[in-house]
Length: 173
Image (cartoon, rainbow, N blue to C red; front, side, top):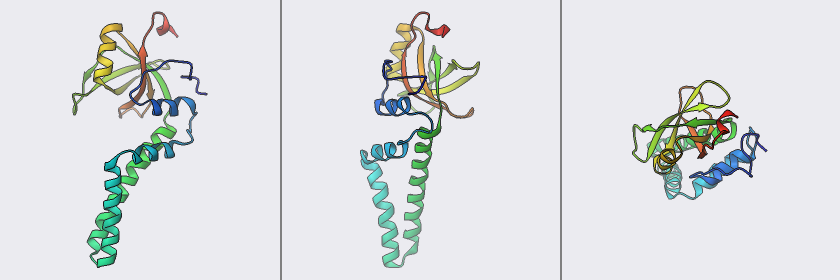
């Protein structure tokens, strides 16, 4: 069990399967590769990319137009690299607890918000991205939220996998 979060604690999340993976498995988290593969199987656009990539490779090899094969290999390498980066992030990134008290705009989407989470383990902050609709009401109601973060390096946004209202006296932990 991870010392930061356990089954008995109540965290809210827009991805409960990811929350379960990171809280129940210590780093390096076994099963992260399979977890991401199962998630990809649920989305049609992933099937389309794989089928188009393999189809271009097969069509290029069969017809002699190697440009198609190169296009297919490039698509497969790109999707493979993205799969690797996501899976390795789930597998190796440490969990951290942080506190947020306000949201900022997201540069690309109104559905998301950015925030600076004050980390419990250090004086540093972590830049995070959260789903605006679920978080904004909680911050207005409770003032502060405790967030469970997959902590990235300094110059990248960290991923919030769970949140809960900050209760009285729990900030001193």
